[in-house]
Amino acid sequence: QVQLVESGGGLVQPGGSLRLSCAASGFTFSDYHMSWYRQAPGKEHGLVAHITNRGDNPNYADSVKGRFTISRDNVKNTVYLQMDSLKPDDTAVYYCKAEHWRWGTMWWGQGTQVTVSS
Image (cartoon, rainbow, N blue to C red):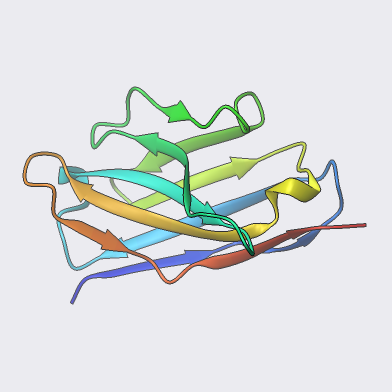
């Protein structure tokens, strides 16, 4: 059974940090590119960060460059999103996505809420 379970969300003050985790099971994690997406109320679902199955070529949405860092551990089958210098505009539900490097098969997590507010 495929599972992507996000954790680490919560309430944080502007300027603070959070680290999201997405634990994968039920598939060969190292065959999948991993991404983080987010959706804020009234806004479209958007890509935040992406990392290849081998852990190279991370790329980011312009709005988070220099503040967020995506990484993965192919032994622990987990992808991370380190979020620093958080802003109220970062408030959203954050989802992780797995996509097979060749076949394009995709899996989504259930999401974790991040709220940035004073």
